[in-house]
Structure formats: structure tokens, C-alpha cells
Length: 78
Image (tube, rainbow, N blue to C red; front, side, top):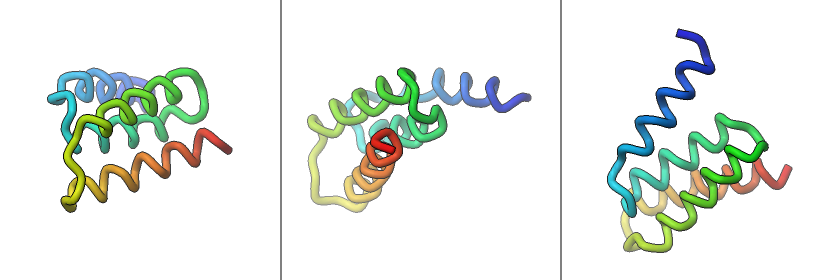
């Protein structure tokens, strides 16, 4: 399997995650970083932000997911 095929499969799998969970926030943020700085990465970060807004903070999964989201946002900012 090529890198682009793996990334496409990861994208499809992430879309199947339960929306509004810390797992989905983390997965979308990691995928955004894998996509680089293009429109796909920007869309994934926006999805991750929206999902994070509907999640309950104050847990280890929240901290981990928000840290990944921060890294993805930093990567987009350059």
C-alpha cells in the first residue's frame, strides 16, 4: 500500500468515528498534519475544532486531543 493509499484509508476511517468525541478530535488533528498545509489539512483542522467545541474537557483524552489539535494548527500556521 502506498503512502497516499494509506492516507486515503485513514481519511475514510476517521470519517467513520463517532463525531464529537475526543478520539475524533485527535484523529482529525493527526490526519491534518499528515496532509501538510493544503486545503485538506485546513478542512480537517476545522472539523477537529468543531468536534472539540462539543466535547467535555477535563480528562486525559481531552488533553491529548487538544495537544494534537494545537500541533496541527501550528503546522498550518507555518
